[in-house]
Each structure stands twice: as C-alpha cells, then as structure tokens.
Image (cartoon, rainbow, N blue to C red; front, side, top):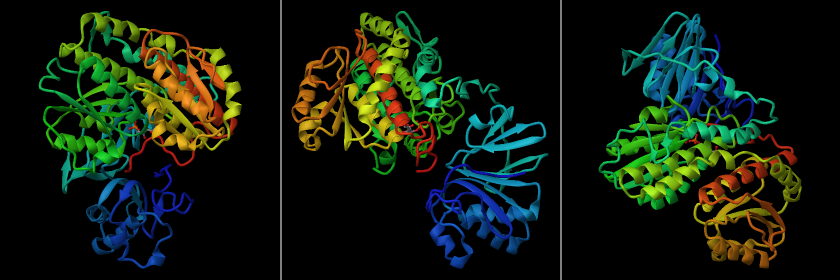
Amino acid sequence: MGIGHTRWATHGKPTELNAHPHSSMNAHVVHNGIIENYGELKKEFSENKFLSQTDTEVMVHLFDKFFEETKDSFQAFEKVIESVDGAYAILLITEKDDGKIFFAKKGSPLQIGTEKGEVFFASSDAPLIGLASEAIYLEDNTYGYVTIDEIKVFENGQETTFVKKALATSKFTAQKEGFTFFMEKEIYEQTNVLNDTILGRVDSEKVLFDEIDDDFFVGIEDITICACGTSYHAGLTASYLFGRLAKVKTTVEIASEFRYKDPVLRQNELFVVISQSGETADTLEALKMAKKAGLKTLAICNVDNSSIVRESDATLLTRAGIEKGVASTKAFSAQVTVLWLLALYVGQVKNRISLEDLKKEIKAIGKIKDVTKVDENLRNRIHRLSKRYLHGHGFFFIGRDLFFPLALEGALKLKEISYLHAEGYPSGEMKHGPIALVDSELFTIALMPETLLYDKTRSNVEELSARDSTICAITPTDFDLADDLIKTAKTNHPMLEFFEMMIVVQILSMEISIRLGNDVDMPRNLAKSVTVE
Ligand code: F6R
C-alpha cells in the first residue's frame, strides 16, 4: 500500500520538502487542490511542527489532533475533511489503521480504479489504463476509505452507493511511436486524428451530431464560450465561425475571469465549455455556475467521463486520443474542427446557412486531412530557419480575423516551450501601442492568408517592416518585405489556411525549443492538467 503525487506543491517553492506526501506522527497525506483556510487552521499548532510551506501539511497535524480525541482513524479523517475549505482530492494513510487508504474529493478530480486484488487512485483515466479494468468516478463531497477487500464511500455522514464503469484497455496512443517527443508525434498525428474527429459527423450536405438532440438549440439565441489557455483560443476561433456560418452572437470568456465577474447570464444562451482534459478547475467551476443559473450547457472535451463531461448537459468529444505533450497541439486542432462542425450544425438547424454554402464548407472540412499532413520539406525549412530565432527581445505573432486567435495560440506555444517572450496580436492593433517595441531584434511572425483580408494584413506587416522588425511571413504568396518566408500551399478556404498555418507555428515553436535544449514535452512550471485555480 502506498500513496504518491507527482505534482509540485502549489504553496511554497518547488523543493523536495514541499513535495508530497506530507507526514506527521501518525499520518501521511497527498493532496491535489488548495486548502483555502490553511492559514487559519495552522494557528492551532506551533510553527515548528511544520516542515513545509504547503497548505497540505496542516491536514496531517489535524489528523493527529482528532485521532487523539476520538481514537478512531475514520472519525479523525472525517473531522479533517469537515475542517478544511477549498478544492481537494486527498489520500491519507495512517499507521493507526494499517491497510486502509482514506480519500476525499471536492472540486479536484479523483477516481478509483479496480482490478482483481488491486485498488488504484488517480485523477483521470490515462494513468489507470492497463492497470485497472474498472473505474469509480467519485462525486464532489464524497469521502471514505478502501482496503484490499472493500470500498466504502460516504456523503454527509451516510454511506452512499457508487457505480463502476469499464475502463478502456488500450494504451496504444500514449506511446512515442518512433518520434523523439510526444509533441512531435502529436503534431504529425493530426491528419489522422482530425479524420477521426469528423468521422460519422458529416455527409455531403449535412452535419450530424448523434450526441445532441434535434431540439437542443430550440430557444437558444446566443452562445457563451468559456475556457482557458489553448482551449480559449479554440473558443475565440469559434466565435468568428458561429457569427459567419450560423449568425449567432458569441461571447468568449476566460474561465478564471468569468467566475468572479458576476456574469450576466440569460436563459436563451447556450453555455459551451472547451477543455482538453475535462478537469480544468476554473472551467469546471464556470460550468457549475452556468448550470446553477439554469443555462443549457455543452462540453467540447477530449476525455470521456471527465468531470466536465459528467457535469454538462451534452458533450461533443474531440476524439484526439491521449495528449501527452504539455503544449497542446492535436487537442486544439480537434477542438477547432468540432467547433467548425458545430457552427455549421447550428446554421443548419436554424436555417441560417444556404445548402450551397453548407456543401462548400463540408467539402472544405473533407480537406483538413490533406492540409494538416506534415510536409517534410516544410519541416526541414522551418528547422533551418529556426536557428535565426533563438534570441531577440520578443516575438509578435500577428493575424486578422480567424488568424488572430491562431496568432495568440502560436505565441502561447512558443512561450510555453522556448521560454522566449511572445505575444499574439490582431494585426490592426499594432499602431495602437505595440509598434513602439519594434526594432530589428523584435521578430514578427506574420500570418498572411491569401483567402482572408490579405491586403489589410499585408499593410500592417509593412508598417512593422518599415520600423525594421525582422519579419517571418507565413503565407502562400511571395512577399518581398519578408526576411524569411515560410510558404504554405494554396487553398480556397480560410479554415484550410488556418490549419496549414497552425502546423507551421506548432513546428516552429518545437524547432526553436529543441535548438534551445529545452524539455519539449514537459516545459518548466507547467502541468498538463490544471486542476487548481
Ligand atoms: C497550452 C495548454 C493550456 C491548456 C489550458 C486548458 O498548450 O495546454 O493552455 O489549454 O490549461 O486546459 P484544458 O483544455 O485541459 O481545459
């Protein structure tokens, strides 16, 4: 029997002392989440009891105190849970009750995996696949204990029932398959992944979503999308698509902001959350708020059975397979693909798109597979170019319209894995401030699609070139003012240009990161799934 937690502490520096488990005389604990009232609780104990700077450690000292009072380990654990506020997935073991693992869940993900003669705890399916055949997805505010023979789950002092669900058995998609990095594999994989994302969801003149009832959009006038990071960028992309293809007003919110702004929520809005992991704490809490306000909710998610999927009225799975690289790539493109399909679906059910246009869009969707295939010549060219972009005082990724969210995403990818400063901007914003930073050491990565506002973007890039910025243009046309040009193939649809340029910015950031000798798959200070706010 053992407990462990591979994440660094949220409080205090990432040092060994602050890493879990934390121990006292009688107990050892691991915890994912934040104990908000730990400062208050700590006051009961003398400061020299604490070895770490974490919020977590207070729980083992509380356990000791309550055990002293009750002489019963379960009662002591219950009292610990009653005392703490915040979000948590907790496991605790004690010498006083050998063979038992106590657990509690509120806000942070926790599930139990079972196999003959073995019991596991994890925060998602991924680590359990191959070890356990069934999983129990714990609800918030439940707690209890397991032994090798029994699993006891409680809520509000009463024992409660639980359901076991079958777990996937194959871990095939989580191997590197000959690539050096997971991120690399995941970039290359997109051509196949996106095919899976689309599979069965279109015929030649219709978008089909088995997961949504025909009347799901009845009474829905507007859409609010809420997400974090890369998923937020997918949401921003979708807001252009929903406006154009379905004529639906769409607002996009960053979940951590949305939660505390006292948002105005109306019953005629659909609340869409986007999340690769399905466990992002801010997105999950925003979703709960929207549900509480009586809104209809829809999740775009990559992980079935995740907390966000379980909380939503309906879910469209992105089917990207397990994403291991911390910097999201295939999950992003799968989100955008589902959202593009959804925009068409809404246009179709609300009769706001002509059959002719719908057919054109569907035809373009059929070509995603081709434009996301990594061309080895392109890869080599980016590899060679990348050596010129390892220094400088910053990067501007710029684009207009759909290419603005892609510029944001390109900048995020680069900063995550290269640790170079990069910002994404709408091209038209340059003269409103950012252009003041421009000189030859400021690198501009210009997204210049031919099919959408080319001339406008071009004149913005010219302004930067006139101020001597080093310009790397990503475009299918020749452009004299570029210092470097990465040529994309010609297509007839902005979304196809979007996917082509997405591949370029993903590879560019990876090549720069590799040259800088960074850990591409596990960049510093970042975690794959952000289950604390
Ligand atoms: C960036 C990245 C993050 C996530 C964000 C939300 O490469 O992966 O910005 O997009 O933490 O995560 P999910 O989508 O799991 O909710």
